[in-house]
Image (tube, rainbow, N blue to C red; front, side, top):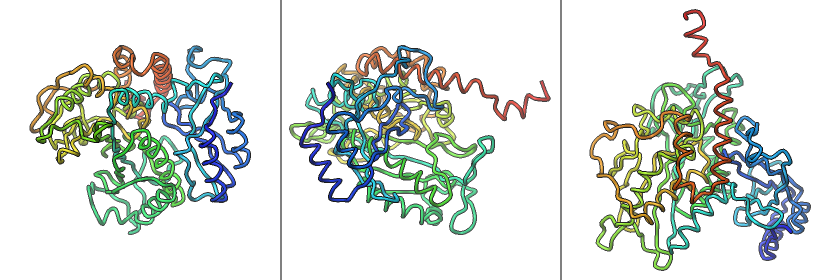
Length: 456
């Protein structure tokens, strides 16, 4: 038995491909790190495969590490490596801009042979969280803000990254937050990103120049969390491809360059009533609701326990330093960017909290799932937040982990969140991250050679 694609979805996909003369289809599966894996098929073979349920892929792609290896734990990465069935989500079917021949891309969900979804799949983890809200009659709404750097081509990983040459023939050397002349340096790249995003049907909003040299930020419009995670995933791919066409790199590393800010993926989130559409974070007279305060309290208490879900790499923790406008704790305050949790100025219907903790390197499905499940637990447990901070939150104690070792240790003891996201997922994610940490520890850095080689 396989996971069948509903006939209506199959016909919709078939019609969409035929109308656009699509010749190839890229079937995408986001792994634990948010890396896109999958298969490319001729359009007719794709249709035949999804009709028969024969579109399959090795289950191990869900547990591959960022280095391309697998955890040693055979309960996580079994040697038998059975196939999973790929079922396309027809809502994610889009044109792949810039392809040599008419090509479509579609995000697929993974199922076992009994037709059950694979619980450790990042997309399924987010779906599980959204069902928690739906069962309460709640609908979460999110809007990511995604930062990234453009850099010169760098083929030697031992050499530091450098900002690229702009239209003026010069590279940026100083901070240019919101600089209009600075963003015009990369106008050709930005215009092509917008063009490709429009062709791919991505609902993006404003792009600005961030504080770093050749650092840009894109804002997504508020919407359904699963759709927003899908769009963030596809946007990253488009940006990288456009950058390469202009002979530069685009990187979503959390901290790609020394003495430059890091790149974040801030998540604006709110909750509305399914029945009325009213924002549940605000009372009728415009004050913060009890549900809003409990949501914030859940973020404060639980996010530090699940940091690897929004800061998944060794490099992620290099970003969380106060001198570069990144959070070190989960204090909250109104329009206060020194806080990990910021309440933007808004009218009651747009009341929301901005989670400023996630890095741009995080898997968008898992970082959004983590943020929403922590807020959900706060709401159902009626947690109470700490008092809001006025002034700098950097004067307050650090409550976020300082490195991936500490983060994984806390993650292994996050019993309350584990209950909601699933034991299998927690075990698989921990094994992957610990394996990556082991690989990192085997590397001797240039800093060690510089300062220890002939001195100690």
